[in-house]
Image (cartoon, rainbow, N blue to C red; front, side, top):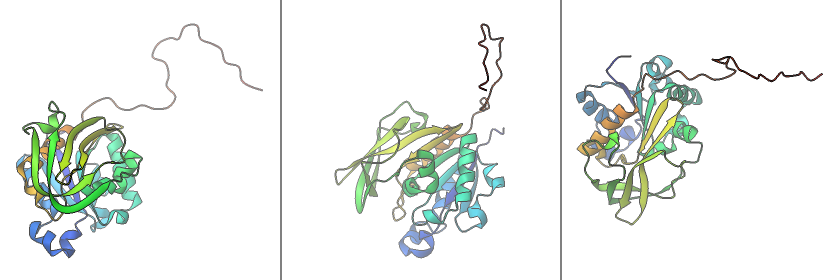
Length: 250
């Protein structure tokens, strides 16, 4: 395996085509805003969007992706089930997956979580403060006690996800709600990180600390050269003593 981490940034890229406010903030798309600083971190980065053939995620792309970053919102249902199956297969094989903001409702995240992944929400230009609640975790390397965003969309509890294996951030919003905004999971050999901030009408993906968290998460989620997963009937490694004879039912 190459030492260079290969990243694919996937974005449905629909708001940028239809909403002038989003186009002004992200003229080349949310995927481009995320990809540029990741390239500066010496990752090998490509982008993919919903309207490309096979949504930009054919087997040859996924098979050469170490970490997939996913942003979607209004077009979750347009992602083909075949693509979702391919992504799930690669996660189980060891590809990392970073799900951003409204990607909580994506087909792939709901499939991997096995729950509705529903939540409360409100768009009111309110302050968000993301508190670090796991300060020893590599995803918060270089981050202070909290990250403050002056304007964001609110997500509030209850967030219908499985209990996170690791909780990294808890958000507080100006309107009073809190939210589990940085959660990690393992699925098969793959690592999954859900990271909440990033509504399309705010310049969140230019915030240096948000970008730092994403780059840290890429390093954390990258595959490790661990053992293969073996399933099914297994022959013993040692001679089994006191073996019990089995009798076939007739």
